[in-house]
Length: 133
Image (tube, rainbow, N blue to C red; front, side, top):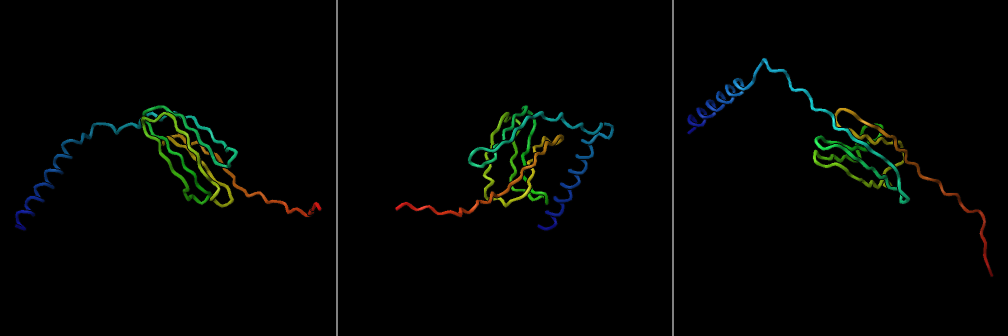
């Protein structure tokens, strides 16, 4: 049984190697990368403090949206497929610590980067107390 399995494994390996060598054409130039997918994007915050991201792109290519901190840690990644033309995202950034973040939108060739600064507003303590009798 072991001899049969070893023989089949050797035969399969030789067949695979010879087939891949026959298919490869050394005279054929390497594939050129496809044309980059054009896209437009916009970022804004709403009254609830959420980050709104809108992406409009051509069909035929992928676009990736990433939210990272300066150290490179990713907090959000979303990829839009080839057939999707428009997308709208609403990110709740209230749980993230204060600091500077980057929103990068990329089609694999071109990348647009926007900085996002999160800062907690300090509430001023009321120093006066008013009472009505």
